[in-house]
Length: 280
Image 1 (tube, rainbow, N blue to C red):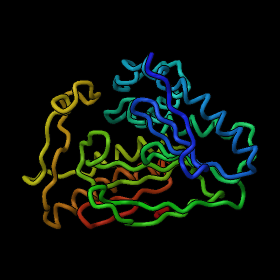
Image 2: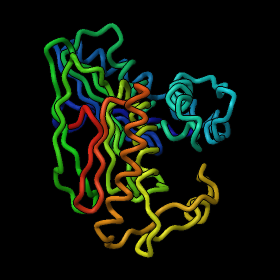
Image 3: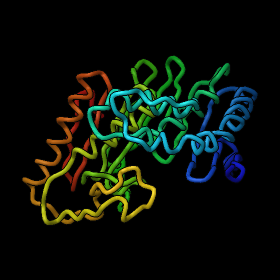
Image 4: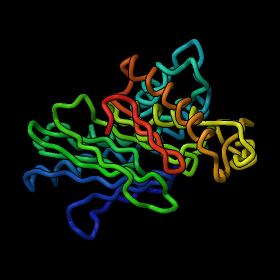
């Protein structure tokens, strides 16, 4: 069993901070005070057991998805399996969707039976949100985490078929097979956005001397990518290489959108941006 989860309001008295090992969530609920307080208690109670549930099934969560659907027990683990199953034609493990699935699970607990106007659960940039009729959110997209600045804005409205947003890229928390600075995806839930952003970011790639890669296992002993080469540095690329890489990612995003797996995608690499339809 892991150490106890940390659950507390932030200094502004409005946002809830949930931390347990590698999971770090900021949540905000808006509504009547009693509804918000009850919602936060519900979220905290559910959050406290999530990490232990994931650890109990970790070997299966790290296994590549094949012809048979993964048999998993925990609610978050099942969310992960549901999100990756449509992408089983590629190398993918349920862990690809873990951050988004945790955000979805906390959101579900927070909103269960509650009357709230707007809610978000931000798990390190993978965001699940709830909007009552007539409500909306505005979110900013940062292309380069090393030089944070807003590259674009996206409006999220109640009547959109979107309740999840996720961003992936080679500088992110997880290893990437690609070279995208950022790929942001809008999808029906955060777990689905999470896996799609990762796979699209993996597809944004090109062979060039400016791209440095290393086996994932040499960077992290427990990586589910094994000895697959992941990106560790990207130098300045010529314009044609940037275009080739973005076009490869855009093709993957277009296929996902055609299959109804995502609403839109925003792809960024060294100052160039391309978007799939339904764009931000």
